[in-house]
Length: 424
Image 1 (cartoon, rainbow, N blue to C red):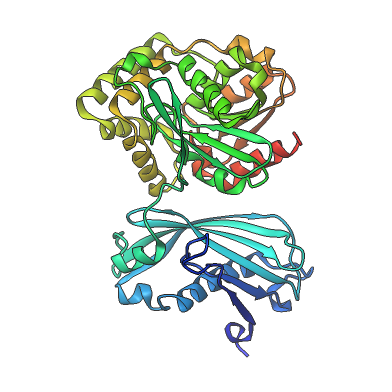
Image 2 (cartoon, rainbow, N blue to C red):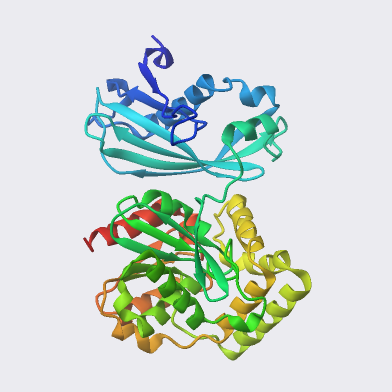
């Protein structure tokens, strides 16, 4: 018997009726049994066999929905560009595995599918995977997703849920809040927004995730005057958000500029911080040359807008291995900033204080993460920073640049989750 016909399948639709609380999703949950021929000589589910199970789950989703010929009849094909799998536990013959598939991200020409594989008997997570597909035509050229396929996948998203609104003076800040448990505050960098944390927001289920758009970024409004922005003002905004949510203190995870804001929180609001996670950031202030470059970028942004700024920044933001769709996501995030917000942030970055002397004063658990190819805050800088923080952990994320949470989401999320678990 062929392997493809020898596998027993069970399908479970997770959608509710129109009156239910959850919308119908494109992908059903699929349950597959592990057979001996899926396993290696030691009786563990083979890594290659797991990839086959994931592919089978995707095909069955098409069979249950628009049909297996969805791509063929539209003259395109989903070419797998990148797959990242985090193996968490072993699976064995006769295990029944539940494969949940969601659309983590959809762009114009690409999509990212997220798979979570759990053993049905004990709900142990066997593996998590994210696979990036690029839509190509019959000649192998990248092409936009056809309308029928786009409808099946759902609307283009930034990976964000509907935010709540918090008023801070004249600014109205958008804040995404998910889950329950100990709070972790996720602070994005420049020129990003809260969706840079989309993978961590989805995966850190044991924590209450709080991800704001800083003033002038994303869905947050702010003053049209660029002089209304500073690292101190961002820190004040975060404390106001915690107050509005009734959160006394939180673990604070700052990416890039978000790290600078985290240092300010430690200086002025240390009692609101239970732990710090410093991602792709550094304590140093801008040197004179860097300050002049900030002013040039601010002038460029005022003249030519968001796209001109991103074009200047992108070469230093991403690792060589990073796929084009990450660059597309960066452009999308930058376009959601107001021009005054971008200019104000550049001024805030230019004028930020030196945080080197803050490091030895940190008295809470600390984690430092850095991409192996980060050109802005290189690994050597991150390691030196960690050495100045009492008992800090430091990890290098392979094949990531200045955006480890977005470039290598599984590896970064695992490191963050492992650290947060030590705080319980």
